[in-house]
Length: 319
Figure 1 (cartoon, one colour):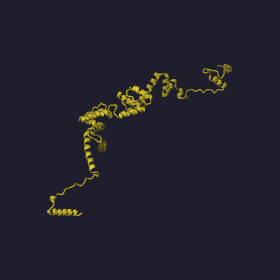
Figure 2: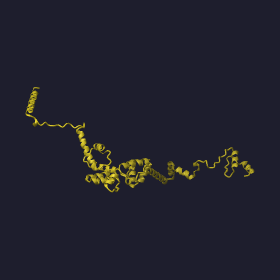
Figure 3: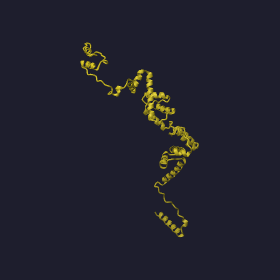
Figure 4: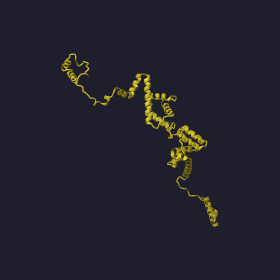
């Protein structure tokens, strides 16, 4: 724009502060004179190098960040209708599952484990035992109980109760029904089979292969000890829990590998020591009592004792 054209443009009576004017095609000098005419501060020209990262983001990035807000996603889902709400719920349920798996890397993903954990959670909070996993997940999410904390607590409880499958090579706690299977074998008198069944059930039925019994005992002493102790304890006709606990603390504590025979021998020795302590609480044996052999006395000694007994008798009658 020439100087005269610029002056004519700036002096145009129709050019007012309220005029909607596109200044993108004007020179910087012309835009500065327009700002000066209307008393506006000139806009700072930014070459882009000093802009904050959030200013440089495009619309798609801003939208993605907005969708990461659960409250925003919920509102958008509600506005979008039933289908959008259901999609949003499923996304949230899956998000919690992913976070749970990350927080519990030892969890073994199997259909059985999913049924047990989700079923127990539904029974606990919904008092329903007929829901599918998807139905239970949606209802638990609706009442705020589908969380990483709730799933983890229920998973740990089921694991401790022996209700879950575990990774291959990892021994688990036996459930009550599994313990009854072992006890049934004990009642038939087949103790070796009972110990093997205990070990197999500890591995969720997937019994590892070992070259020999000695190899198994050497590599799995803790599991072998638990199996032997369980079978031995349940093979006793009567066993006081407190007495058994005391026996374990005094005789078995610190023993790295227990076998049925070792436990049996230790129990017999402990019971013997325990009975002795009840008879002699001070730990000192009393002096043995001996009977005098009267045949070893002489005639004089016998006569003296007789006379003494007569005197004692008469003295007693005079009292």
